[in-house]
Amino acid sequence: MRRNTSENPPCPHCGYRLIKNGKKKLKYKTVQQYYCKRCKKSISDNKPKHFTFPLVAIKSAVRLRIEGLSLERIRKFINRTFHVLIKSKTTIHYWCNWFLITCAAIFPHLGKLLHMDDTQVKTWKNSEKFYFFAIKDSVTKLIVGWSLSKRRNSDAASAALDSAKQRFLPTYEPEKIRTDSFKGYRPAIVKVFKHSVKHERVKSFKEHSNNVIEDSRNAECQNKRKKT
View (tube, rainbow, N blue to C red):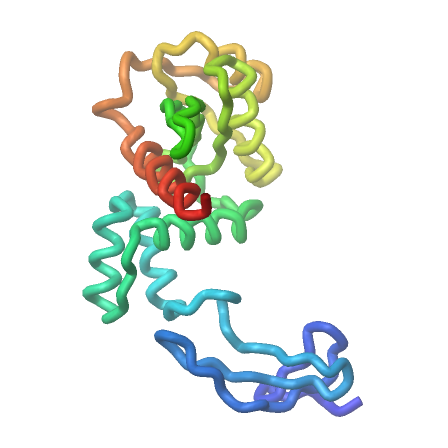
């Protein structure tokens, strides 16, 4: 087997040296194409995979989202700064979801306080009602867990907490979870975290922290509407 060089990366499938096979022009960037003589496969140097926008624009959007900016403000900023055309804020939401899934088990900088809230949503076609539960970190502003349920009860809240717990590092556990006055949150927190996590209630999140949760939920609904 020939030695691999930095100019000729190894094939991700068999490890054999790739050869350059021209370039492919995407909408906003040009990527290098490679070919493997051993397994007869074409490899693209497009990172992240399937993303047509520049990586620097995607990274900037995710960073701004973590800092707390709304999806619409991020969309306008990226269009203006990187001279691209993002038509819908759902694109930004998709990038942030990709980042969340990619880094699902890498949350070294989560704060000790998590915010948990829920909101009622309706399907586009038959107006069927669901409850969207979400958990947001107070430091990174990331949505770290969520669930969708037809009922607003402690089981639905537990499902959201479980989804968040699966994404935590083994050494991490929040000190406190802040919720509104819904009675189903307390038993859900005890079920998932036992009695090691404190529960803090507030009357309403209107002046607290659910803006990001509402924003994410609206973008998710728009995304599902496009798919249907």
